[in-house]
Amino acid sequence: MSKDKFSFSLLKEDGQSRLGKIKTSRGEIDTPTFMTVGTQGTIKSAFIEDVVVSGAQIILSNTYHLMIRPGISRIKRVGGLHNFMNCKLPILTDSGGFQIMSLSKLVKIDKKKGAIFNSHVDGKKFVLSPEESIKIQKDLNSDIVMVLDECPKLTKDKNLLKKSLKLSHDWAERSKKEFGYNPQKALFGIIQGGIYKDLRLESLDGLKKIGFDGYALGGLAVGETQNQMFKVLKDVVSHMPKDKPRYLMGVGTPSDILGAVKNGIDMFDCVIPTRSGRTGLAFTWEGRLNLRNSKFKKDDTPINKNTKIRNLNMYSKSYINHLINSNEILASMILTMNNIVFYQELMRKIRETIKDNTFDVFYNKYIDVI
Image 1: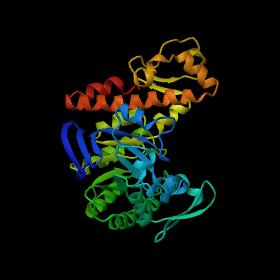
Image 2: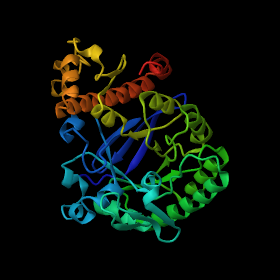
Image 3: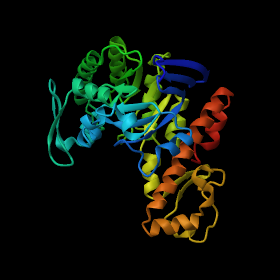
Image 4: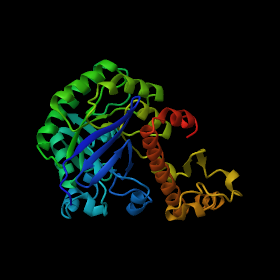
C-alpha cells in the first residue's frame, strides 16, 4: 500500500464550481465526488466490486452502526473495515453525530461524557464521547475521519442553536486532540448553525482556528427547503478555505447535487440512490421512474440501454415491474446498481463540464429533469 500523504489540489474553477483531486494512501478521488453509503459495512444489495466498476472512488460507512453491530473489536481484529468488507477504495466514516439527532429518543447529551445511547437493537447502553468516536474511527482504519458534533434538528430557536454550536466546537477541539498527527489520514471539521448565516460563519471561524484537513457542512437536508439549503451554501461556502475539500453531508438528490456544485461543494453522500433502488425507484437522464407503476407492465425497454455493468441494459422495465410486485430480491439489486451507476455518471459529467467551462449549460439542461 502506498504511503501517500492526504492532500487536496484545486485544479480548476468554473464560476463557483470546482474541479479537484484528493490523494489518499488508498487512491485518488476526483472531485466533485459522490460517496455511496455503506452504513453497516456494506452497500445494500450491491457487490463492492460492482460499486468500483461504476466509477466510485470512495465510500462512506457509519461509526455508530458499526459500534452497535458487529462491534469494533471484530473489525479491528482483521486490520480495519477495508479488510472486513473486502473494499480497496478509500473510506470516510461519519462520527455518530447524525444519530444523536435521528435517534434522539434513545440519546442523552452530557457535555463532558458525550452522547449516551441506548442501542436501537437491544437497548444496551453506549457512551460516545468525541474521544471514543475518534478511537473507533481509528480502529476502523478510516481514510477520512469526522469529528463528533451535535447535529440539531431543524429549528428556528437561535438560543438552542447557539448552545449546540458551543458544544460542537468543544467536541471538535477534543476530537482534534484525540486524532493527533497522522499525515496519511484526514480529519474533517463540521460546520453547524442551522439556517442562520451568522451562526454558520461563527462555527466555521472556530473550526478554522482549530485547523482541519477538510470542512463539512452538517445539519442540512434535515427538513429545510432546497432553497434554504442553497442560501446557506451561498452564505458560507465562499468563506470556507479554498485549499481544503468542502463536503455537504447527507445530500442528496441529483438536483441538490447540481445546485451545491454550482455553489462550490466538492463532496457528497446520501442513501437516496440505494434506498430508492430498494423501493422501486430508478434514476435516469429522462427523470425518475417508479417501476412499481402498472404502466410498465408492457414496457420491454431497459431503464438505461447504455449501462452494461452486470448487463443492466438487458433487463426490461416489464421484467423489473414483475420482480418488484413479486417481492423478488433481484429487483433491489438491479435498481440499486442502476442508481449507483447513474450517480457516478452524473458526477463524471459534472467534472467534465467544469473542465470544459460548460457546467452552467449542463446545469440548465438537467436541473429540472433529473
